[in-house]
Length: 327
Image 1 (cartoon, rainbow, N blue to C red):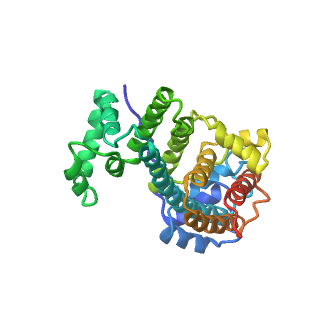
Image 2: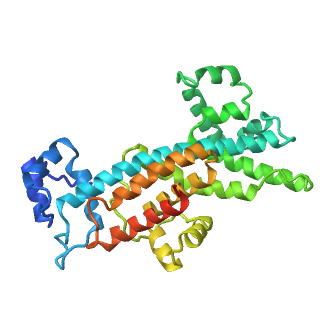
Image 3: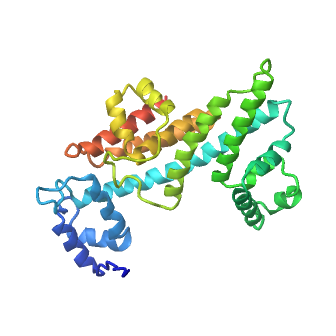
């Protein structure tokens, strides 16, 4: 079978401006000359033009409506701020999930901190065990992990193990621990150690956090397509319930918004940080940053002519206001 590759020609910067004009992009608030400079030194066409997906097209389906170059710039800047926040939020989520797990281990008289790691590794199939052992060996070459690995490589305690593995591997371990604790609780009903169901809910919510963290860490666009769409990722009922009860949004409005995987993952990240970050200082610091971000959403543009963007930004601002109150 012959493979046909589609190869688009390279455009000069002047040709990029003409290409945008042909697509209906206007230059009322930012001149064509300033836009050309922006494309040369601030970003590049492929990344910036991705935000066009948030705008409808005309009847010919060839030109975008109500789209000024300044809108693309504004969305790109907001997206940049959002990516930085997501990385910060997700790092905190990972940290406090580890704090929560270690709290359960520390308070559990039936755990010594070593057996749980050995049993986890034994529970993995051959391929998964090989992958995590290879991951540990790779991390052992890091100047930040090699001493801990060398000291404990034959018998990892949980507090060392979770420092060396990746976030993805940690989530797998977290789920194993939740299920293990649940089994222990069944054996010792008079000694409730934790809410294992809550930890299992954490696991599924953090899977969503991991996906958007990876996108943000790789500098992928996040806000470039906010349209409702079908996706395979199941949105947690815990998140839906909080959106409905805490934010006061109707079920239909919530359903439409979380049908966009990007919006669902952003909200999950905000929710999980609120839920897990047990440090009042960190919550207070992040609240201030998040409110700065919320204020920035409509600072340059009201988006009155684009209800898709306006309603999404309104939802994010409401979530920040309710989940991260200040003052």
